[in-house]
Amino acid sequence: MLVHQLIYQGKDDAVAFRDKENVTYRQFQEMVEFYRDYLYYQGVRPGQTVGLFSRNSAEFVYSYMAIISLGAIVVPLNFQLTLREIAYIINDAKIGFLITMTLLDFSSELDNQGEVVQLVIPDFSNELSRGASFKAPKLADDFDKNHPCAIIYTSGTTGNPKGALLTHGNLVSNAQAFEAVLNVRESDVVLCVLPMYHCFSWTCSILNSLLAGASIVIMSAFMPKETLAAIKEYAVTVMYGVPPIYNLLLRIGTNADLAGVKLFVSGGASLPQMVAEQFFQKFGNKIIEGYGLSEASPVVMLNPPDKTKYCSIGKPLPGLAVKVVNQEGEMLPPGKVGELVVKGPSVMKEYFNLPLDTARAISGGWLHTGDLAYQDDEGYYFIVDRLKDMIIVNGENVYPREIEEILYAYPGVVEASVVGVSDNLRGQAVCAYIVLEEGQNLDKKALKDYLQVNLAAYKIPRDFIQVSDLPKNNTGKILKRVLLERIANTDNNDEVG
Image (tube, rainbow, N blue to C red; front, side):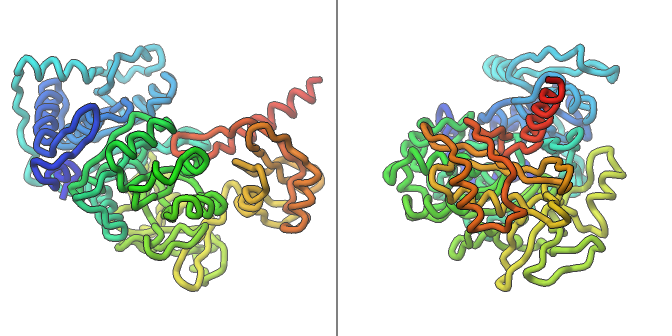
């Protein structure tokens, strides 16, 4: 099956989207067909890369499906990027067409590859209202699941972002494997509040829902009160979110607000145990934590809905092989920490036009995730930390997440993030950024006393910095590089002074 064929899984008269107005599966198919014909008329052809720059909307889905149904490759773009960042991806992915809601002026940022043709979505509607008809040909008979479908650009936490090239088979197999564990049904109403350009939202909220023939409630962005209102109004039964969303709903939501939701799924970043426990105590539903990365389409693991474990990312999806390895690539036994690697049909084809990076990331078919993890005796996996975030103090490995979990359990702590900073004596030292409940001030001595009971001395942060909020990307992942930049800037200012 190809990705765009998922739009035919639902019954014709069933509601596909609950957006500004209800859209049935039949209407959905007709809109994709019109978009497909229109894009072909504008010059989109098989093998071309087409950018898609828009907030969540039914039009985003129509455009995505129309692009790939022509045999072209879609490049979803983060709508929060600057013009310079957009131009980098356009140049890197060799994008010839950009579908957008409004015209963008980034001509000064582009190289000499040629003009990018911008196609503005409201213009499509004008053509539709005039009854324009352009018929695009069917795909060639040899077009199959191994053809490229999408290029997903990583968040670029280090260096320039890289484009993970995913095939139709990558994405469909991931949606099918995810469905085998989660079992979303035709009768379900799924909330899509995470940004569609991100692989987590697209595969789980959209593709998995289409595979089941379910209804999707589209929200352009996460707004707490509006999200709670939409959950009640549309009787949402399945929700995909990131830890900061669940943390906020925990504080402002009521039992009545979330009473109809049967499945809460979390991804994008590690879910603090304290948030998970308090959510269960308040709402009587466990948050099902999973794990993935764009290079794996993205879901790799998920907790079984009937037997979840706090802080665990669960077990591998059907069809995926996972193991924990040491620096030599040797498999480690349960309980031993090493790098998590994954192999299977959802692993990306390559990094677009980056053969050396691809070779470093994929060895013998195994995708190296860069995450440190271990497996327990029951086959559940636990992420310890990012390999690059590990702190080495006097030769001892310190995992920031361990400290963060303990900080979350301290009264008044809303969020916490731990980073490593340079230290002349110890090589590195630990520094903690903390967000407290409104009106509270940090008592560093009391917090340090609390940590001394729970942590070895070398793991205790050298400094605690109270902030009003922590920098995050759109999936809720705390941007530790931004915190490190703040520290570096502070140190430089001190030196100048």
